[in-house]
Length: 102
Image (cartoon, rainbow, N blue to C red; front, side, top):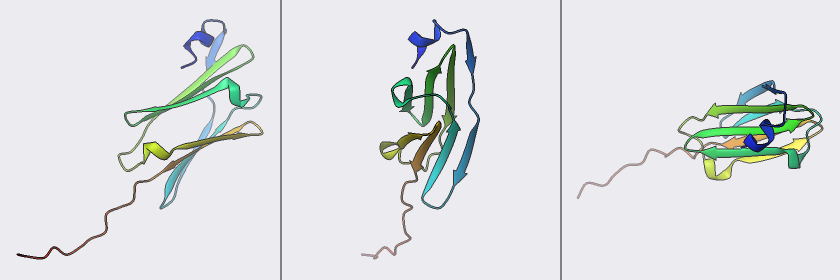
């Protein structure tokens, strides 16, 4: 992720992020001013989420270990006005049920 870009840049930075949670999902909001959609990558692998990109002479990246209750197949990413928003849905919880005895 962005390793080919990093060799050309002078320094690596870590963008500020806010992390929120509700009953249905986690939300990561990152401050990446001046970065376009084509300058970003977002990846998930084995309960680890990472995003990276380039801004001028800087390369940035952040990595997060995800809890086991997330649905990694349905993570979404959006960028608007220099704010990257990653929505990470939670897996539905299993409802208790009664098992019939045979």
